[in-house]
Length: 632
Image (cartoon, rainbow, N blue to C red; front, top):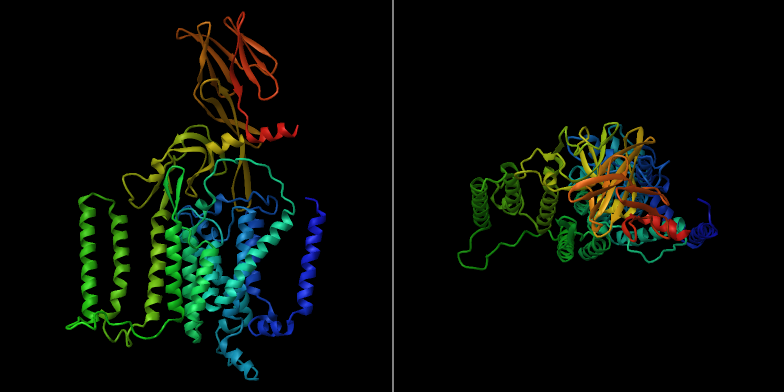
């Protein structure tokens, strides 16, 4: 792509702005500030992390040669039985925009988290502050070495969170965003004001990237291809899980170092981050092609989360109040806790009886009941455990930390049944597939994929029950069975490409739809798959009958394995059939003459008798063809 004058001017302007800040800013103070925590004042861990994730996109996913069309299918969390997926999903991305958004977030938040962690251990920083030379007695662990902390420990922790959020992903997932939210959560509880500033920095970096890659945008009014809403594909559960993990890690670091931000700062910062970074996003599919966004509930969740996080970070260490202590003969906390545990136990037993009587899936239902029962029982455990286990009463801050930990488990565990899925050996529907390596690619309508969970989640797996339309990709070795291109999108675009492969190899399956819109009825169409210049007709629709009869003859458009035919019948008996003629050519079936006219617009097929000409079909036109015609 040629470089435009606007891009050159933008780069020069940014360089001038950096020079201005360097010349007139308090660089000595900032340099001393970061040098106290970073080796040579550089956040090496952030740089290593961004470099590693970007390198994976460029090399493993093929982004170096196919920047806008990376390879994704081998790197998605399809199943726990496909470890490559959940080991790589946390660092793989689906598009350049996806990669840039996560890397911009990493560049904005990670230096704050890395500064809080520090390249120098606390003992060495104290020695430097006292004007002494830090020395090692030879017994220091590897985490006391600055370069290990900078380029190994910090990036390793980020990648570990990425793997963890991918493992507990609610269905197939992809992207570093879970780790980005963990970084943001860690940064927020350690340096809340700086994290709020980082939100603005993130938006500024996004704008600079967009201005550099698309300095001028020209768009016309258009409806666009059919697609689910943008928020429906966001991994909100991984975001929330990452944030909770990061916040808990930050709280642990603050407790170890004896430092606490103020409650109001943490509360306001959590609200702003939750609102600005869409931590409020709660989405669930209601039915086929219908998604529900629980925006109001999400906002309530963020507000409550901000309250709990601020108490967990900087709340009081006073013991929890004794309930009902002002009443005569008030029960002790231990008695109240025992009564609550009894209520939870009775509820669990009643739920178990209901599962057994209603013949519900045993493992999943009992596991869910047990999980919620344990979470409900957690607040009542401290008063009833032996005194030797808890030497001090539970404080308000400790209770808030317990609530955060319980919420983290509640967010993570329900995803486990979705990861225990397998694909049967004969999972490919229909017979029109093409084999590419160990992938099978086909086009089907109303297909049921042979994909199931090893956990009993009902009579049959919901995925297998719901009919699937479109280009289907199946790989039983990788536990993949998914719709790569929706049928309505292919109907809109006319052609698409599906990229399959693995480490070190990549193949592209070109998908093309052709069809004829039959007057007064549906469209007769076929779908072809092309791999390495070899074309396979994967699907042909049923014959479509015109609503018009000509001299008592009924006419149908019939897709076949290699052509589109015109079939003529009279009183139920076949008169004959022939291929639809090419443009400006004609053919005869019985007493009827058919011709294809190439006029302004799509080709149309007409039938002629002695004194009548009737249009019976028109070539299906797709969005790409419309654009080409408009340009001409």
